[in-house]
Length: 496
Image (cartoon, rainbow, N blue to C red; front, side):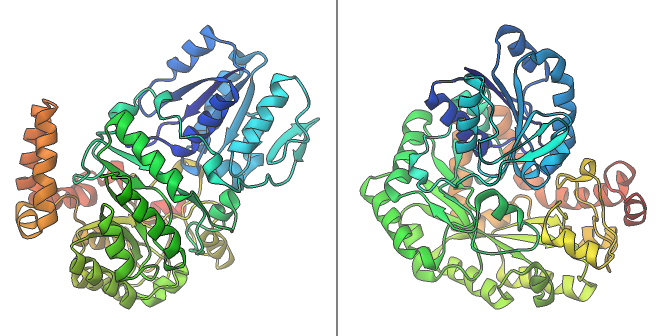
């Protein structure tokens, strides 16, 4: 059977969506012929071109909340062209609100999709009813039919490697600059599913997708995957997309993985996510021994009040210790910060600024709190009658603006964001940090060796101009282009 999968346009163009890549891989392993259209790089007309050339049993679309309306519009536009094709949608928003899609799609896949799509494909191919396929929602005579939960995949080793090669711009994504320090070609991996924590800005959606039990691939399978990427695509760096990679409760598993990476001479550098209280200096030392050069930590805030609101189960002291341990070991540590909680006052926000000054991170990523549909934060806002930005068409983290009516104004939030943001290091920053000195010249050499002379020049120029550009960006977003990119809190709330 022919299957067409579509990934909708998103602001972030690095890497590939591993969730869709795994779905494509299991279908291909079943014997299906799979095409993928990635609308981050391609135009809608490519979908119509493929539909004119092939008859597809399934046309599947991945949808997060950001692109849920785009998914609906695409499905309605495609419907007249499909004949007997079954339109399927899956992803986070399909999982939390399946009914939203059923006027446009034939079937909604909830949660983890690999087992469900295989069962569904078999029924469609044999032209049988799929009412006994677990994990889907569909309509029958205008009645919503929910078949219940699909069993989660017990052994992730059973999954084939993601179908990287089916993405038309995969090779380009390997050298896309999401962060200046990536040692390209760089590629993402996902070696576990689920998270043991219950932060209010992502739960219970994460549990609805992957369940409450954490599942991890075996060290052997992970190493096989890394070696595959290195040999086939000449990868030099891996970034693990796992919600949490290092945890002291998983010490035995991780030490086995680290030892195997060394034994098999994987020789790739890598980075992953930790929590402030999820690891210790011995585990970080072990990580460094097998290629880890740095970690990213969801610091979120320097205020215990705000951390409690997020249910982070961590304290500022934990953050200070983690970043101190990383400095002792020569590991880079990036801090992810969120401003804009409805309980955040100027005093609380200042605590975050002071914490960032104290820990001196190697990188800072900042965001304004976005209440995603279905999360505990949305429930809290509704229960407490707090006004916030609603409407699927407005959900984005690409353009930073106030989304919840709180003590801080939009301009104040931007002031706090840009007071701590490090988009890319200045020359002084590079000189005083040994790791950055090494990676800076390594990346410059990579650009030159690929004969990307214009990009090499831009890279050098950006190093010298970064401090000035940070100031310009702050002015641009706050003043110069406010009417186009930044919606004031007053207007934003009034449209809710």
